[in-house]
Amino acid sequence: MRGRYNVTYLISKFQVSQFILMGFPGIHSWQHWLSLPLALLYLLALSANILILIIINQETTLHQPMYHFLGILAVVDMSLATTIMPKILAILWFNAKTISLPECFAQMYVIHCFVAMESGIFVCMAIDRYLAICRPLHYPTIITESFVIKATVFMALRNSLTTIPVPVFAAQRHYCSQNQIEHCLCSNLGVTSLSCDDDRTVKSIYQLLLAWTLMGSDLGLIILSYALILHSVLKLNSAEAASKALSTCTSHLILILFFYTVIIVISITHSAAMTVPLVPVLLNVLHNVIPPALNPMVYALMNKELRQGFYKVLKLGMKGN
Image 1: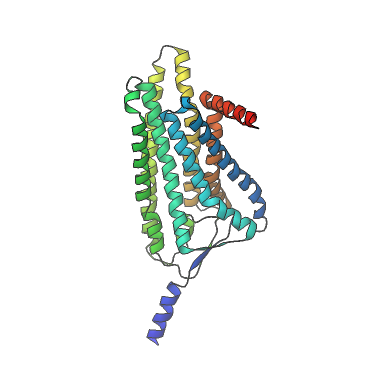
Image 2: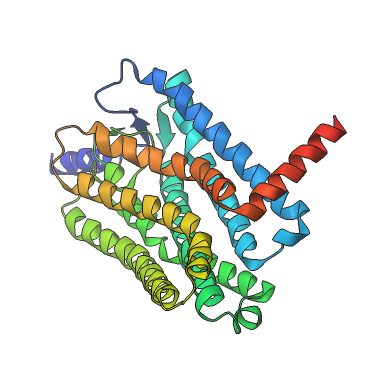
């Protein structure tokens, strides 16, 4: 009798072979209407970032480290959006809600990796602007193509290795009976909340500390860089020179503020006892699709060289037709 109980217990511990992504909590009956704006945002993110890459590639004046970092950011943005949007649209259009455990943990890893990569690229761009404004004489010798390659490889290795514990810890847990995730994607907190392990609190705290150590160090470096930039600009005697120096940082600051503000809000809403669970889920989804669509437009609107490149590419396209 005891042996039969043990067999039943072991089966129950491993009976979950897939998760069901329910979509947006509280609005399941009409959530399919969100597919149109989300699909448009996804198409905008792909087309705008591809256009940015074409402009940077074709305009020799844009073959500079700052624009190389922008091109890398465009690739990361498209990759992040493509990681989640096809599955979300499949849920909303075709009710394809099931996802296997390996696929779920893989998606979790890739999302964390690309979000951390975006944060790392923002750090590189902040350092680039700091050296360009505060150390202009040393800038050409420090920020070279070799520096861009080394910084990108370092960030890729850092983020791909340090985010491994997130899906690994999630995969080590036991999922006994509940497999419905009130989310559109495999978020760490959404998945691990279904675990029946007793030690999930310890592992959740470790994962949050890991995430905040990674993102917090990036944010600290960015704040330090822009504080030094502001200090240097305020010492300039010419108002015109100060305005020109700050204008090169404006687009960076807009994107950085949006990126980290939403991450902080998502963390707070997930940690707090939310009476409207839709809010953190919607914010989580939008945070992974709005920045990829927003970043190219902000740069195109606020960067003179990119605007000129866009006009040239547009004219070439019209002549070709």
